[in-house]
Image (cartoon, rainbow, N blue to C red; front, side, top):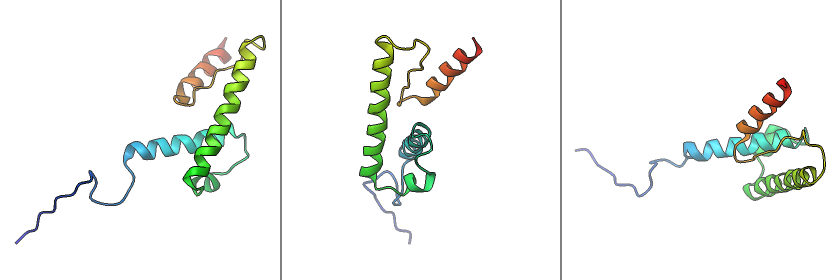
Length: 99
């Protein structure tokens, strides 16, 4: 006799979805990269979620403010950082470096 269980969740175990894992590692990467060496991977990975989100928001706000001040009369060669799509910023940087 085989039992069939009906679960309300998509996953039958307690784990992270692949989409959330991707979001988590992107967020960790951006904190490490844009934090300019102020954090190491283990520290950011083990941070409480609320603290990691707070740190990410502060870094994002800082760079948004920097981009606003640069675009309002500053250096025109600055790279806009899109925290939702960091690969696009890297591609733009590579294109600007080749020129």
